[in-house]
Amino acid sequence: MPLIIEDSKASAQTVGYARVSSEDQNLDRQLEALKGAGVGRIYSEKMSGKSAADRQELQSCLDYVREGDTLVVCSMDRLARSLPDLLAIVHGLAENKLTVRFLKESLTFDGSAQADFLLGIFGAVAQFERALIKERQADGIAVAKRAGKYKGRKPKLSEDQKAAVRDLHAEGVGVSEIARRVNATRPLIYRVLNAGKAPKAEAPAERETAQS
Image 1 (tube, rainbow, N blue to C red):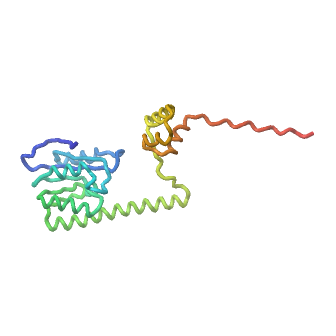
Image 2: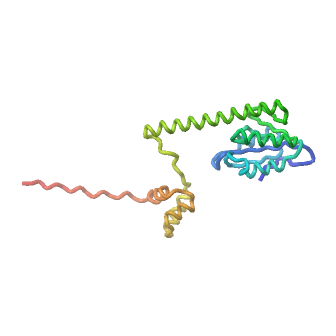
Image 3: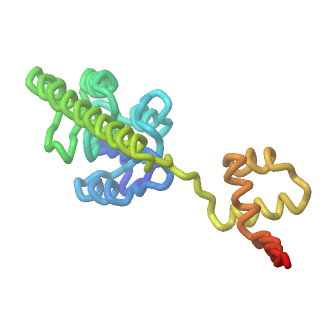
């Protein structure tokens, strides 16, 4: 559902869109920036930006805006993760006589030739920066793997989820079914179940008998 600060379709509106890529990321900074820019209605979501068509709140936002409105986004990469998607969204809005404003880049696009030129340049730069970041991450992982230090990202469960795992196991639910229910891997479930168990005591070493 959109965050509505003031809502009136009698005249042109300033509408905002905010996005982060995952549930554990925070939208607060973007929301505050949009409010500070005078946005009256904000659509926000926590979802990857790979495909514009899969983002429900973005589609709701694009369906809501009308001729004369301004769409405000904190930065280009919040609206789209690829140059073709960015161009398609902004061009579509400009063709319907809407304005798109990006706060981080301090750029406004209204369908003019100059704005279209700048959009292509800045969008390409943003995409190139993301590619460089991914390349640096891949290089770092490769170096860590060669050094035997890379273990990958460890999946995590909350304390409530761990308690649920133990309860389900006590009820006789199998490990595979528990893993499915809490969206975790089987090894992780086994680690949770084994965490509370006392380590097995080692058998006392046999004393060698002295030979006479």
